[in-house]
Image (cartoon, helix red, strand yellow):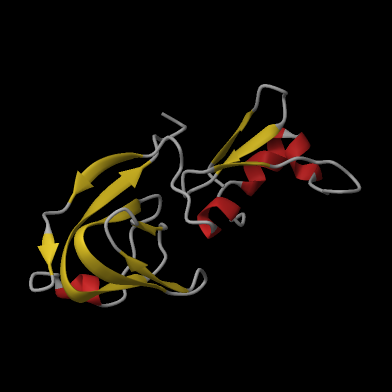
Amino acid sequence: MTGFTTDAAGHWVAFLGCGHRQHVRHDPPLVERPWVTSDEGRRGRIGQTLDCVRCDAFEIPEDASVYKATDVFTEGTVPAGLRKDHATKPGVWARIVVADGRLRYDVQPPLARTLELEPGTPGIVVPEVRHHVTPIGSVRFHVEFLRSPDPAA
């Protein structure tokens, strides 16, 4: 958690390092979060992690925008670093966009899955989650890097 705000109904919402926002209600007996009811309690939670269901679903934050993109890679020009496990920095999302062909996208735990990417089916890279790609025959693709605006700015 990097900060807090309230929604239109006055409920507390946490800013998460991934760029998503998540309600953090104190609603006993369903949810026990007494710390959210005070400034001191909320300040004490800055820097702590909160499971993000939107990251688990590979959802890029709505306000994220592309700030950089790679050149187009082919099966012969894929950098070695993309073929072995690597991760983006905190708060940095990526979208693997296939123009032609197919690309295998392997995501490591905690979100472990293997996807086959093709035109119209991009690969979403969650911040700090290790992953790698493997061409399946002839392929052309590029990678777009995205981030959300800093809520403190």
